[in-house]
Image 1 (cartoon, rainbow, N blue to C red):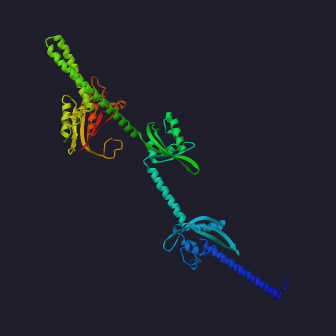
Image 2: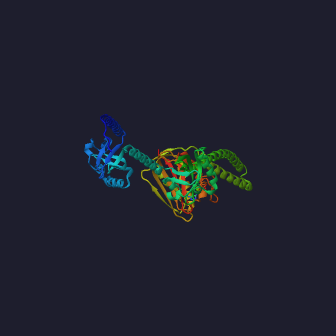
Image 3: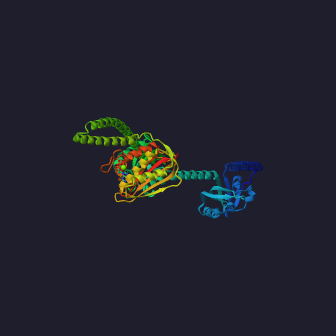
Length: 504
Ligand SMILES: Nc1ncnc2c1ncn2[C@@H]1O[C@H](COP(=O)(O)OP(=O)(O)OP(=O)(O)O)[C@@H](O)[C@H]1O
Ligand SMILES: [Mg+2]
């Protein structure tokens, strides 16, 4: 039953309604304000995905200025071509499932500018009409940050992969390898996949493992940074020496040791070589001192011998004994003079000369009574060198003589000379610059590995009745000319002795 309202009741009702409308209007203004200031695009779509309403931010995202420009149009129209299908599918899916979460789509404006958008949408029903309520966020900055991150990751990866030092990431707890770069694969002879199945225990000789692990633990505790001269075992079982510089790092809550491997085998060899040279010099000085005094003693003896010989020339028996004594003393004198050459040899008396003729003459002289063949291969434009001709020809003669003796069944000796440029040779004593390289190559017995380090030692000889002073003399002479002498040889494959003399 409808109760008729009195006029005053009606008036009160109208007033209530007016106040409710005012409140609604106020809320609407508030919400509109809110929607416009959230920095989020807001759009309502009808069932066909066409725009019914949108805020200003959405209008901007769609690449337009006013709502009227997009009203009634499909969102696919300002979707980048390559995203159109994905967007249409997403709208379908939204109707089917009631929502879309964090969909990334690129919008494009009339000038072709791309704006990446993240979309969240919900289907709502108002008065039996289905609509999609969509929130869109501009993710340009996030995309840029992601790209920058990818870019810097890529850059680090390039550095990682192309570094000369071997880099390896080891799980601190299990001591298994997690990742590594190309350089370490090459150093060890394993592929990346193989290394990822290995750990610390697999790449060091068994007997050295306790020491290696101790160093590893110290590095993990940051007590030391570099573990020096660590023996590292390759896949083929051969061993090289490496300095390992390691730092503990944390990745995704896990602790790793990041190890940088630097192969120091060559460096070690060079150090050993240096020590050897120092030893040689010390022996040389000692030998020179002895030889000098020895010579004085012998000079005295020989002087007296000639007096005795004169006085007792009639006594045949005694004369013969004295002659033997004299011969022995002369051999001693000869040896002493050899020693002096090896040790100090007197400072070289240098002259600037072309060395070609000297090489040929010395070799011809040394091989005059030999039946081996020899070939010269000497560059036309050899630089001039500042040398003591007598000393250098002695060196060449010594090398040629050794080559000859190494080929008892005959063969060919190659004598080469060329100009070379030394640049930045890390493990050589030589300064940077231009040099003449003289190589004496034979095809003889060769030198076993364990003897290679001894052949420049004074008095080292494998030949019967020889002094073993030829190469040590050659070494000290070349050293005094600021040059270098070295050898390449394998048993049965002959030997090459190389001399480097600075071009003046
Ligand atoms: N071309 C070569 N091929 C093989 N072995 C060599 C060669 N040159 C040197 N050697 C080895 O090095 C050693 C030392 O050589 P070095 O010239 O100093 O002494 P030596 O020839 O034995 O005696 P010396 O030169 O005093 O007569 C030799 O005994 C030999 O074992
Ligand atoms: Mg010799």
